[in-house]
Length: 494
Image (cartoon, rainbow, N blue to C red):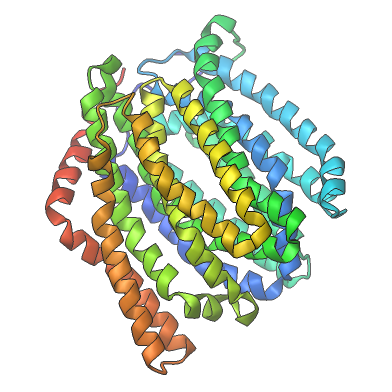
């Protein structure tokens, strides 16, 4: 056990399934409030072009960031035993990966800037090359924290780093730094998280490297790595396509749509999927617990849909006043783009739980095949709609995401005994509640003269209330889900 400063083998460090999710969601909730407060300020302090430069500049570093972990962090988390030499081997391997990625990102910057016809991107991308380097260096430390269910500490670090990053961005924006305020925010947030994770994890690598110990993780990671690359390409296709075909204005609107949805999606979908992976790993038992894993997927999906769907749908149907009130009048078109994008954004969030099923079942090859299929078909639909404008292209993405979901559940059914209708049924109640309340709020706002502020506050209140209403309507199955998820952490890991 040399190389570790703490008892990594401890089963549960600071709580069970919901204690861990509560800690993560609490942290993300604070960050969401911070985003809600900071994005309107940044939207007023910075030009729309600044957001376009940042969105375009993040494309190559985002691809590199998906490669920085090489899928090995997830592989370590799912292991039911541990070896200090094994963890040290992964650490040194990822360190080399991070250095190589940073160099490649910096080298690609001039070419990409020339293609996008934005010279500012050379410096921006070169600076952002630090982000995948930082992530590669801390992946093993983060894996040790997650494996030990120390999500409370992950949450505290996430909040502290997020607050520091936002404050730094606001300060630089006030000082007239332009898009550099957003660039420095990304680097500072990643750096602070890395330092804290390395200090808290108790993992201290020693001079050990074994190809034999590394190979099982590489075999797992290669498909995970390719999958991450495919998913990143899927998310970045709109940025690249809008930048080339429709100009920086379209990129700015799409970028703000993503920013508006990101806190809620990552604040809910991220924690649920993060903790679910560990719980599913405990129940898998070399395939004997496949049925339990399927049950966990359905329970986690219903819980996530209840928390996420109603509020997003209300904002999509009645949220124009919210976007104008928060972001100012020039950003009004974001409301319409957001409404068209919501179905695809929600399907992507739901898919995060399914990704954990593939990992636990060690069928990352199947997940990669599914991702490639979805990328190719989705891209074909998107590019067919692109010549007709921004709105139709975004709508086409959403239509495809909805149509493809049964196919996605079919892929999951090859790993665990999952019924498509059961999976679809978990989404019905929150969707119906969101549509019903959203249409009602829209009718009230259009039929009265409440003014911008009152309309925005009413929409916010109804979006929040819709979550509670969906929970009440589905109270009985949710209670069963809560019981199952609570019990899922009781299987001990070595």
